[in-house]
Length: 627
Image (tube, rainbow, N blue to C red; front, side, top):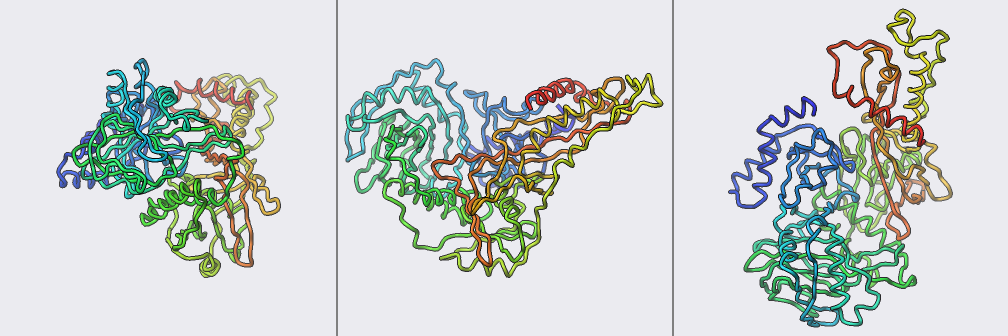
């Protein structure tokens, strides 16, 4: 562990911030104590401790890192792992981390926790009995299960893993999402026995992703909505029915409202309700105690002919995801995102009904470059003479909310929300605001200059030929340098976008324009590479390989970006949610090697770097061989 992190751990105020977060989350503290705590957090500015999935994580809340998430502790760097709290005694392998919500994108909105370990060795002999048909497509059951299985399910409410959902205004309460194949398999067997015959036709399995929801009596309702169906065209799987498993019992007027077809005012603990996902529904807190329930769905195998591509639904879902992220900066966008999600859910069953009210657009200024976006469409003014590759680069950085330096792209933009009935206003709006160029091309070969020619003399080390020794011309050092270059090239050369500190650069060769499509070339999957930044202390060739600079690369696996152009604008369209596309984005920092030709003072010794150097070089050589 570094001295800096040791100092942080010794800082009692930060430890108190970390621990008090979970104490106050229980909701028992007086309002003035909560206000004082929030003021402390707002005045705390510290560096993040590590990164996971591209998100900078802190071990305590700060002015920036206020959103709590839970991750497997083993994913956190070992030298800082002990700083992170383990909030659940029943799931000690999970650590609490704090992230900057401004860094979230659609890839990281949800925090799905692996909880199969809670059910390992537990007798999950589940049986659904007392089936009752409440309406067409609506059934209730009583769940019978062994005491140990019941205790495991009840323990889900005590794990201290709840967080407010992103769309908390419309959802109410708290929830967390978890994955358990063991629980899903047990429920699948029970459902296969208990479902009425018509529902068994094509039934495949229970979705192993569960949402654990908790409502206190004074929480707001989970507002009326439709559940978005699970959909996998490749496996020909689609969900048709929602499953609600109530872990606690209670009453409300009503507790579950499926108006006009059915409603439940009294619900017993371990009641299971299955209903057609075509139905709108609303849930209310119990009036007489805590309401806890699990939500998942029944997945069915469907004929190939049932799967059709509707680009308009994909367009709407893309907008919903984008506006969810933008609502961190402009809260008024949350209601639009929620409306889009509900419209998408309804469209799967009833077809897409166009909105009749105005739609939101986001006008952004990124370092003098101005554009308008809604999550599917991106407009750039041609009067600023941008290239299509510049427009595509900025749109990708925005859509995936990439990191530039230590900041998320969207946090670097000045944002203005504009609601309008159409897009006719956009060309004039952009034309009246001239832009600069914020993205320049780069020749990435400049990162990798050719080494010097080896020296003819036999130079084994500086001690034997100290006067004539030249590390840049030593044959073994040059060999290691070329190996390190090869490993770095494997990651840097395929990347379409490069970040040097806070500068964004693009590789024009990785953007191919064909017809009305922009193809972004990249590498499908990358593995981080690190080089030890150690200083020479003499004698060994590998001690002369140092870090010249650190280059950030952003790699995208995306379908072609469609574009049209008018006299005034380039109009780019990101069709990322069509059924046949899967999108990926990965971002990392890659060190660029150099040959160091100097002598390190003894005072500059870094034991951690020296100890790790051999492992680092073995990894570099392995990368060389793989490449």
